[in-house]
Image (cartoon, rainbow, N blue to C red; front, side):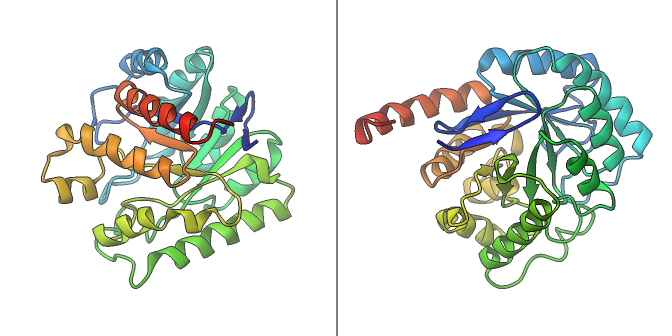
Length: 280
């Protein structure tokens, strides 16, 4: 049975889990400014009621071209939300690449570090190694948030993504981090063309060969807007469709803004799966 070891929870991945997005930022690409301060906690509570299994709290936008946020500002945004969110009864993930933020949120009881840099910042691996149970989501990002939309990946993205995630996972395991703590995210929209993003989805099962669970983060991404013609605030249906396609191709966690709609769609997929595979 696939599982994800986190600080407080051993998450059962036999059925797909929903990670609800809580952006405490003024400039995130889809909901910047909507859930800042106390509104972030209220939004977190709403997502739990809608069926989120995990909450992913972030204090710095990583949209293409976004500026870096100073450490003290990210801490100011994130820590009060995490302090209260750990009481909501679900796993708490924090979307950060700064080791100081990782340390602070883990000290507050956070369960998962979700790092778009794949723990490449100096000191990031050290924090994870020193917290022996926290979950880790390693994501592939080409270039940086400031220039990834300018210098896109070239050639076939899948082997490059696979090689990076395998290399970083091996480095973590060599330092004593157990395989059960690690999840992969292939980084939709992070320095990849529209064609490369959809090629990764089409060939997603090739990333499963090394037995690391996959997290898919398609929600409201620009590639969905490119193929649907819809602005970001109208991308709920394409987002749910992409989440279902990712789950059908083996993703165990989907990171989404629209928790209730995604949960409803997954219930239909689950009902079909139970008839196709009664052992589920």
